[in-house]
Image 1 (cartoon, rainbow, N blue to C red):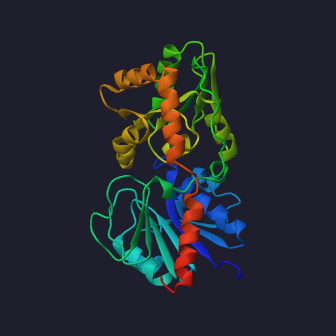
Image 2: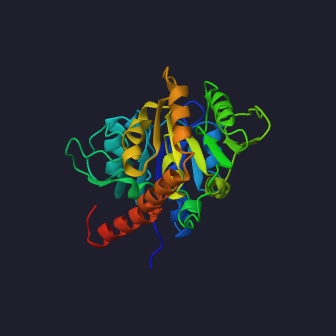
Image 3: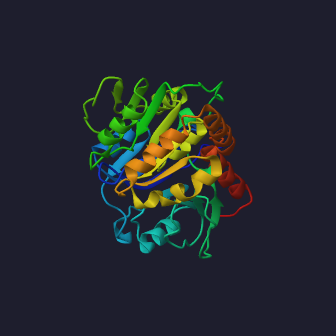
Length: 328
């Protein structure tokens, strides 16, 4: 078997923009490196983003999204583009360079010249026919290695003992502390694991603050949690993989598709946007709903049935199949 060629990942992230793009692209990078391939990142990001790429290949830092002329002539075997700001001209330039271009697109914001588009959302796609093959639905979501193989949950505890709160890699408006306090008031006897990217102190006894977690540690916390309150981004798919009944909160515009579809898909609770006037009421209602162990059991079963964790493998096997057939 021949050694895989160069994979170049074009993405962005950091404290202001979040780390979801970098997180899911790291899953592709680790899979490719395990196959013996070389990985190069073109990363527009800060120190938080670069920390997530440690041991995931070579990294070049700087903006790349606007000017085709600024792209290095890399001629990769596979290029993966995960960006909400990339221009159509740069998309076309990357497609011209790469043997196989792959675009991660949650919002259907562009049309694509050729290659593949991974669209993990549940809305119909593509809205506008283009030259690419669209791979749609949650089964295509790239999850980090710790989530590729996860044991099914055992019996559901009748009383909530462990709660996970995570609002992503950044909490620019200090929403996390307020939500942790609300959760602690609703479940005064429970342990709360608060995963935050900021140096936040524990707001009260019984709250354990976590920062800079590996995917293995994050998966372990999810598997211990009876329920979660989470930003409605990439973490939504990891929580579903671990069968965690979850109250979802939108902290960015691009998370709206998850708020729209995951409640019907498996029973996750839509608490709306972080800045909505009724945010606290909706979170409280969601927590009250998830007190019931029968509801939590149903959500767990439906979530585990939805996410098999094989989106990364599924993509590379699809690329290999296309390559054998001589397509692009």
